[in-house]
Length: 193
Image (cartoon, rainbow, N blue to C red; front, side, top):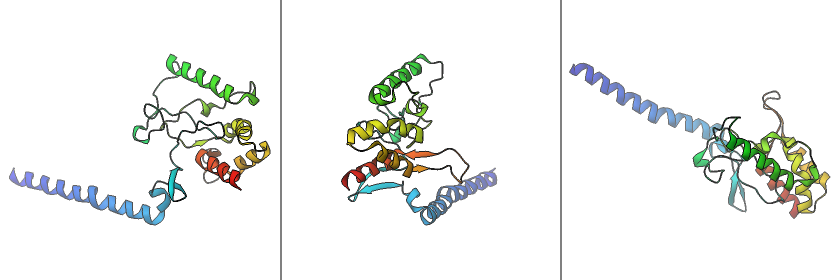
């Protein structure tokens, strides 16, 4: 029995060293060597200070900015330490009421769009609650509001959307997306030119 206990203890310590020390060190080293920006959180800095991450959505509510998807992460949303979906099913009244309220709010914020359908991702949360992307259609839906709030030509705002539209990964995986933080930073940069 002591021999079995000794073997079990040795295997536990050996696996602890491999799985909690060596393996994480190798993966971290490879991540830093091959994908340094992503491994460090894809932080965006302006003036030497971080303004956000390209991987995590943040709240933009001012009319001169494009708004991201709603977030169910945390009490106020966009909390990276509380990443999760709402887990409300499609027949849940609370979800239905929230979406109806969001549709009404988005239509009021974007009156130039009239009765055009509101893009789905502007009223639905992602699985993590922190998706930093919207579709080009969702960005175009907000373009008139942003252009008016900034005193820019609508064509200039639409051009920025086109410039910041990422195609599907490898040309065929997924759909085209726009990173909201990148687009809003481009708007700020265009304003200062």
